[in-house]
Length: 113
Image 1 (tube, helix red, strand yellow):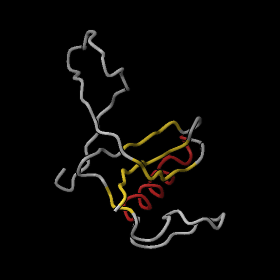
Image 2: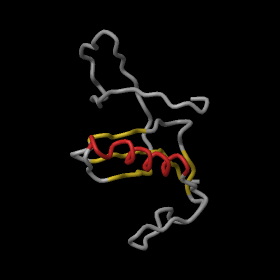
Image 3: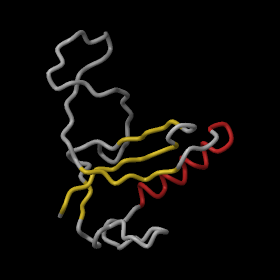
Image 4: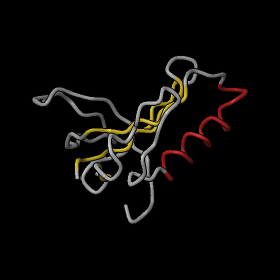
């Protein structure tokens, strides 16, 4: 919001959930979107967390959708430069952080131009 990033923690619920909501919590509905995922595989939290998070976040927040990007497999990760736009005005970004299990991910919402 206004160029600032804030955190919220939660989990998904059924759309028709009508059970109790603990004090200090609220139910929010977020629109769906496609996401571009910036990822680092599992790593040692105590040894590498700062470096891993820094590298993934630098890439995620500076990624230019107007350029063609090619990964190590030779496949274009942009599917045609300029085809997508960020969709952050309508949808939230996500982080997944489970170093020894899934690694670290930053997910940014995109939409087709």
